[in-house]
Length: 309
Image 1: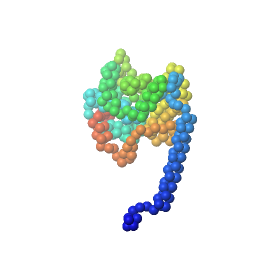
Image 2: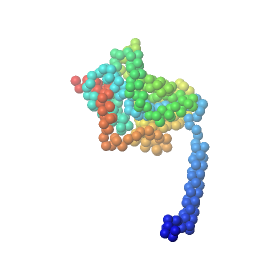
Image 3: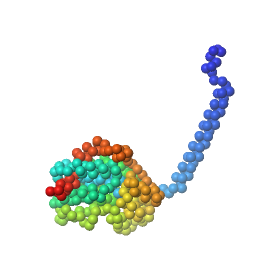
Image 4: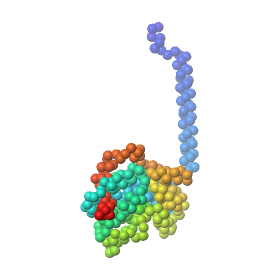
């Protein structure tokens, strides 16, 4: 038995260790309880948002890289390319634009202008009804799987509270309306392409709904709907939408670019980031992203090739 004594802990050491373990456990339990109470107090102090039944409030969501990964106009272009609205030309350049936008999460004015110009040139002469029908198909093919679940949940919270939720985007209003309807949102504000007798002319009505124009659209809609902008919320990823975000009492920076993130922190705006793999942009484009973009193509390709002729 003496030979086995080394296997049995000494009573005194075991007691000391037991006391230490007990004290540590009690301290951890006390701290955990205090933290839980503090969290509960903080939650109780913060007002519930969105406020259920507050019909004087509404929510305004940017689309590209806020509600959906990438740019809607680029995905629309992929669908038009698939339907042979234009030939395979200069696709690599536009594929790079789309892949860059998805990874960097920053709008490039020149890229977006190319996309808008090309889309207008391609739809010219086509019927509005035709593009609306194709838009429904393209949503299922290229957009449905690119909706950010986190942003979708935010929009649903407003809907569940009985509030209206609008998309506000530079994308064509026809595309934006399809997306809003598929997500169960109230409606959409978007760029309006001119049409005569139901046929696109290839021109815009006014200018793209971008930057300050978005703020003016929200202000006009709020006035028409009898909304209190101080009680409304707005969500965007881009610093270009600071005018719109600044209009409302509850601005959110969603997947923000660097400038918006900095501005949001200075203004103490709430931030949400649902992106993953952002570091990949610093080391190069993943093969899947590059191949997917090249394979899809876009409406900008034909516009670029026409300008080079």
